[in-house]
Length: 76
Image (cartoon, rainbow, N blue to C red; front, side, top):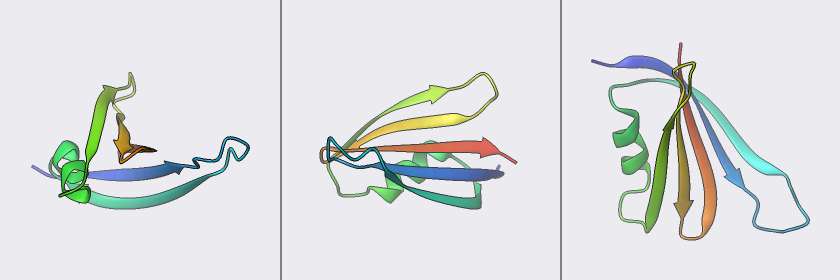
């Protein structure tokens, strides 16, 4: 069963002196957030850790070929 999520995708800057990051926000119906993340990086060298926050938000801490990213799913 799909649920409606606000999806926040953050890509952290690799430069030590630059704390800015790219942030993308979207709303989508998703049946499985973990599959959504796996499909986004299909064929790439990726590791991730899944975290469930007290408010129900699902957060994936991602390492994509050395680039730190974070993807958060908050049910709408």
